[in-house]
Image 1 (cartoon, rainbow, N blue to C red):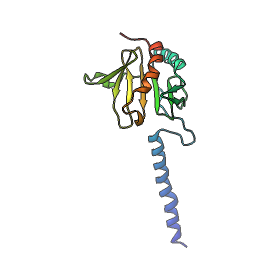
Image 2: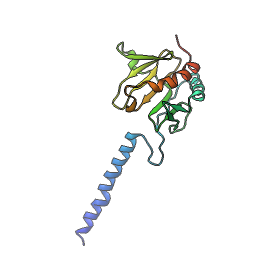
Image 3: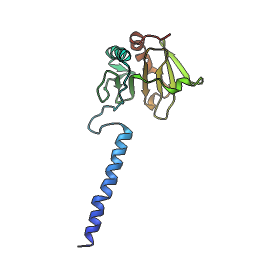
Image 4: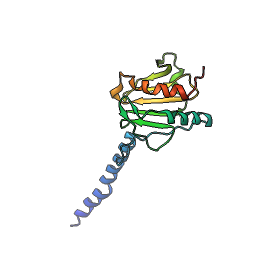
Amino acid sequence: MSSHRPLSRRRLSGRPLVCLTAVALLSAAVGCDSTDGAARVAVPSPPRQEAALCRALHKELPKAVAGLGRDDAEPSSELTAAWGDAAVVLRCGIPRPEELNDPQTRAVDVNGVNWMLEERDSGPRFVTTYRETYVEVTLSTRFTHDIGPLTDLAGPVARTVPSSL
């Protein structure tokens, strides 16, 4: 019986701690809450005038993007939105991306809105350029070669976030 106690202590104090730590790290890396399907999104902290533009944009955002229904991100904010279980995630009022300093940065124009393109393993990231605040749209890998979601978002951005040119 005494040989059983040390083994039992090891199991209770060692492995569960390692397992819980691994679960916590995986949950943080995935960025989701297991009890809720909403995407966990970092909420930007723009200056007041930019936040006002983001609130105006939030009111104009469509209920569906690329045929995907709106599934707002967590925490709930007028600076973020998501569609299709985070297949499309929008953040408004982000800081100026460093990638805009690179003269080789690629961009696309969608219905009068210019977007910087950053190709990533997790899916493309687009950030508006020449606007009074930066709007970021991240897409899941299913949109790796499809800018279709931007067509649904370009109109609201153009109407609510003025050009800085």
